[in-house]
Length: 80
Image (cartoon, rainbow, N blue to C red; front, side):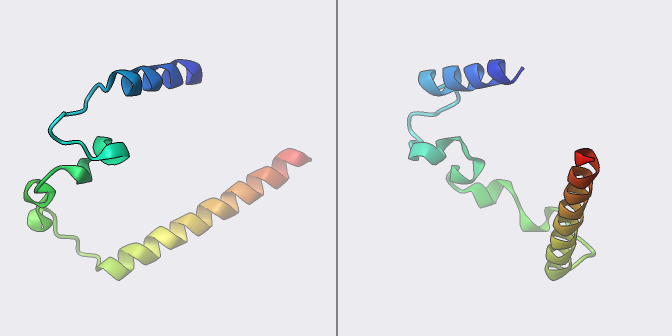
């Protein structure tokens, strides 16, 4: 599966599939943020979260720490 994914990715890159010639941004051409007037398509008021931004950042960091601890626990458990 991994080999077929890599081969498909190489084929797509070699043939420039998905690229629009008038929007040549180099390596970043595949990213949606490179679309001109990107903000027009993704409005900030489309979704209002009851959690403030700092809360989202704290949740993200706590989740990362928990996943790290889980990984360490699994690694120790599998070595014995």
